[in-house]
Length: 327
Ligand SMILES: C[S@@+](CC[C@H](N)C(=O)[O-])C[C@H]1O[C@@H](n2cnc3c(N)ncnc32)[C@H](O)[C@@H]1O
Image 1 (tube, helix red, strand yellow):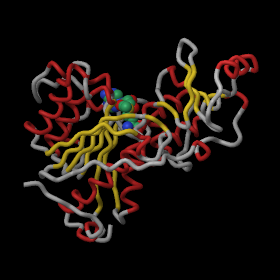
Image 2 (cartoon, protein in one colour):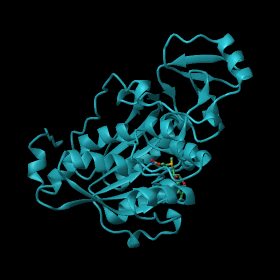
Image 3 (spheres, helix red, strand yellow):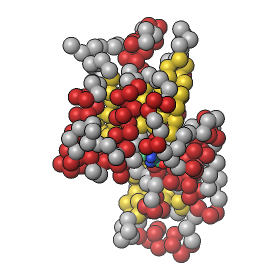
Image 4 (cartoon, protein in one colour):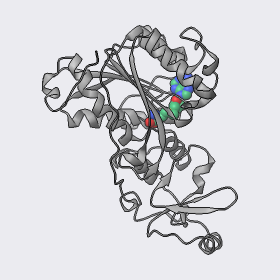
């Protein structure tokens, strides 16, 4: 940042730092100095990965952290777990959502009043409980906390990654801004840039299974990810379906021959190759499956940064952007 002021943010439900990686990259491209002033994740293995890569260990359970103990910040990021919205739809407002992890985001926003926030969740939040869950969330953010809110379902495939991963992104700003979500950009990266050249034998299927699969399916692509469902039906694409943290990722197979390596999964989520993978293969798959696609949220952050910079009088940053304020 040319005037040396730092753009402070917090990283809630930080996992392995998908938001932080995106924020760091977006700020670097715009000559802004980002500073993460607080991070939290309850999972020890995520904390290990985060600490190895960002040099600080996230705090644990957010429900146990008093909002008054969280440092002031300009932007709040949170990719909250989807389990937490299953009961929100029946609730009416801020006091009602108590006991859900969304409430923890809301109470921090209420107390700290950052200039902006970006929340991420699975696409299913959109239609959950006939739309009531999202309605309650937006209602709390807009009516009770006073933010100007926009939301959209975005697909990682549209932001350069060969992974079909749809996510709902909710963006809020303290002033009413004319925020537009980033336009889709294709093509996505070819699989040749994702797949490793040397892969350990442990990732390959046995000759017997390989034979069976190859007899069942012929791919139209040179490099493809095969998607095998539980009943054994196979289809293949030049991209991956959404990585999952549970068992289903086993059914994503490179050219029908082997499972994805941890590095390939991290690449499919947009993490750079200097991101250190310090956990077991099993944990790495879980972490990649839970992460937010870096390129997707980076595209969103790049759209939001000028507004946040404007409210901090970072006029040099604004020069390159169009910034519009609502009525
Ligand atoms: C969907 S993942 C978010 C992943 C993250 N955006 C990333 O890029 O890796 C949700 C995260 O919330 C964490 N979590 C769940 N309950 C929590 C709690 N009570 N306090 C803090 N973190 C929690 C989980 O451990 C998980 O890593």
